[in-house]
Length: 142
Image (cartoon, rainbow, N blue to C red; front, side, top):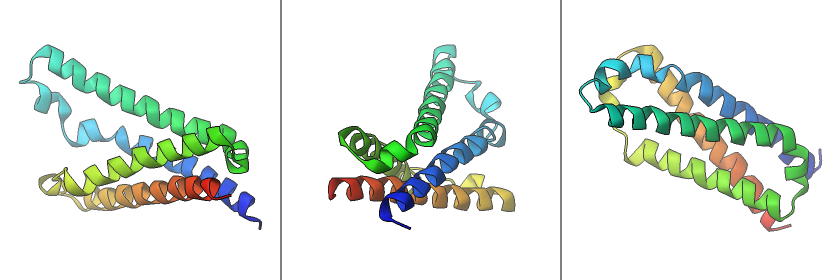
């Protein structure tokens, strides 16, 4: 398998991982009981919280769809492919950094399924950083 084909297939995996994150993210409001946790906040702050969440979901959908629809073109390279893969790598590197250095999830990992999900999410984030960061580096050095 030539390197370009390998990159293309890794990008398809990246698209799948984006959609798997979305499946998990739809469980978060119920699992963390956002309805009652956010209830004491003023209405505007509750609305901002939900709107920010919706925008993040939209970005993840866009990253997944763009990758799925354009994987062959991204693997071929060019300035746009490099810019998009670098942007996605930076996005997921920032999110992974938050996972390790900002979020304190210990009190919420009360069930085995939550602990498994958290580890799967972390692995997913690492994979996204490697896929898109590796693709961007490969494109930049060709």
